[in-house]
Image (tube, rainbow, N blue to C red; front, side):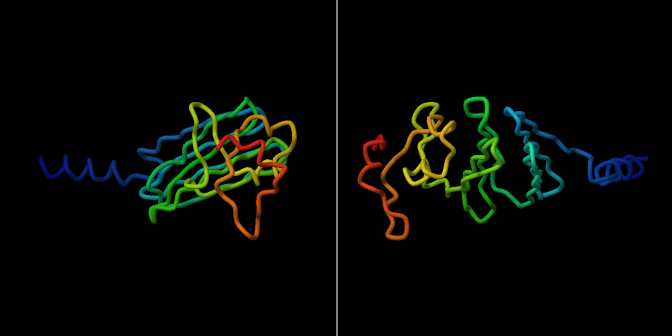
Length: 151
């Protein structure tokens, strides 16, 4: 009898890929995000007005979804190798991505490198704060934009 119970329990655990899945969903304006896990693999989908992308990976943490100003979808995750990624998806179909060490949080605000500001459509620029720590020869900080940096 004990063997039969153990066999049934084992069969239930391995019955199908959907067993034990937990879906996480977030709608943010015209963008929608969802994630789910199968075994050790995490899957997440970002859907916007014009396209849908699905990512898959073995993650250390995340993905974590956040809606900024009711329109910008932020996604953060850390890979099993320890690489942390922040990506902001915008309603116009564009996105920007940075390593987690290149962004900061100040209270409820996300602080991006000042170079990101020019890559963000004007209606969404005020949703972020900006820093001047990431000055690289290939992507220098223009002197005129330094006034927009909070640190």
